[in-house]
Amino acid sequence: MGVQSAGGNLTVLVIYARLDGIVKADRLISLLLLLQSRRLCTARTLAETLEVSERTIYRDVDALGAAGVPVYAERGSNGGIALAGGYRRALTHFNEDEIRALFVSGASPLADLGLGHGLDRALEKLRGGLAEVQRRAAEESRSRIHLDQRRWNQEEPSREMLTALRRAVWDDRRLRIRYEDRNRKVTSRTIDPLGLVSKAGVWYMIARAAGEMRSFRVERIRAIEELPERFERPQTFDLELYWRESASRFARESRSESSVATMWVREDALERVTASYWTTEIVRVSDGEAMVRVTFPGNDAAVAQAIAWVDCARVTEPAELRDLIAARARQAYEAYEVSR
Image (cartoon, rainbow, N blue to C red; front, top):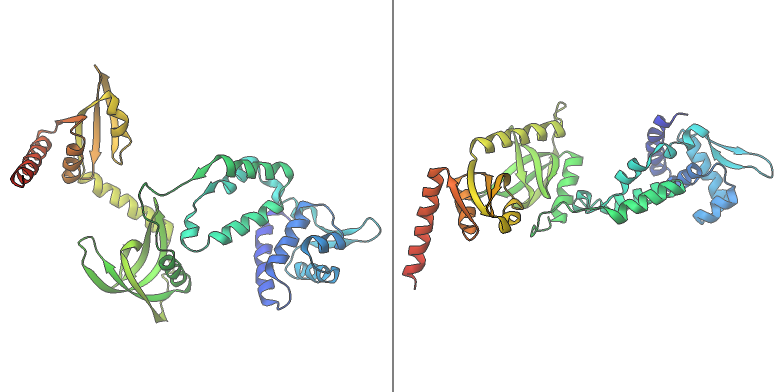
């Protein structure tokens, strides 16, 4: 059996194990990985490793065969239980870069959804079936690279909320939510939850509401109520495609409303400016200063940031933005001067 069919047989195996009242799915997968990492194993060795009886091992082998996994027994004093060569080689086809990609350490969005332990167990089972050189690559990857997808000072999402939403998405269960919009107005809405998307640590619920496709920030959902009826998922809905198009549309709209400021920044404060959230471009450096072009999402953000950077940067263009900054500065001065 070829390598490409391995995943399909593993899925069948898990389904079979769930239907069988005796055989456990976890043990079957562990047995499969043991056989995949070794050419031949005796029933006694497998029984000792999995802490079960040899009779249980033979029963598990029958279950593997029933699921379509090509397992066989070799007779004789040097015999044992083995997988067909093509199937056994499936994991050896991973190169070191592919292994590193799987085992890079990080706070996975799956943990937000309540699936973090499932991912850890899956990787542990996979690690058990790897050759020694591949196991070393996996361990090095986790100890040398760590991905943290959240911004500084970003609050942890509500895992209880995300778990409930994830279940509603998988079950096609209609929901009633209380949602707070950007103006802090709270309304009740009935939605058909179609998918969840994580963007830079911020979760979005993609749903159909009043016949229209909408994106709801999960952190603004104040309460959810699972309704008894299910909805029919649109057959043509593609979550990845929808999000890609939605993100592109948002980026175009943001660019059309953006405010680009040219400013001179003290060279010793250049890192402070370029490390900000905004898109920055260093135009040139001269006499201890750098000309920097900064793109803000709008004039309000540009004015607020320019005032915050007044100790190290000054805006030169556009003139309209300079006028807005001066007016806001006068307003702040008058407000605090009166209060003295």
